[in-house]
Image (cartoon, rainbow, N blue to C red; front, top):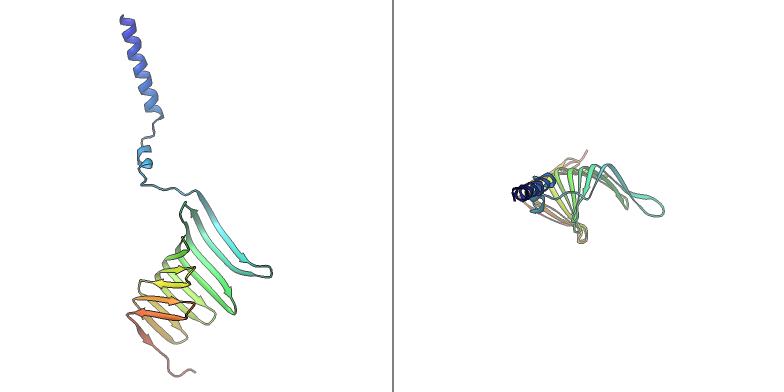
Length: 174
């Protein structure tokens, strides 16, 4: 009888030790949904957009992470040629999710007409072709300067809506 009890205690102890040995201490945190890991990570990324005759755009990033619902790139730089205009944009972080491009932290845009735009966050809706900045911005072209608190620019209608507008316009060009 003593041997049976001893055998039962040893078997329960063995099962408990195996369970504790294979259990991850942080596994319950992963199951709670608090953490999401990237399904793919890329470093030193360069992506080209091209048609049959030429390269239309080049996009670069130090690191890109692909998640189930979005792509995130760090130290993003993009150059696109649309018609006779060259567009350059850079930001510390770029997120692509559901036809929205969101540029965050140190966003800078410049084109070949010497138009410069600097803000901390810009969202671009690819389908509607609308750029939105809900953070203070500075826009310059030649000697002209515009500052504002927020901006909505519709590329289709070529209209701009600015809140908190302040402008300095150079009157005599040399």
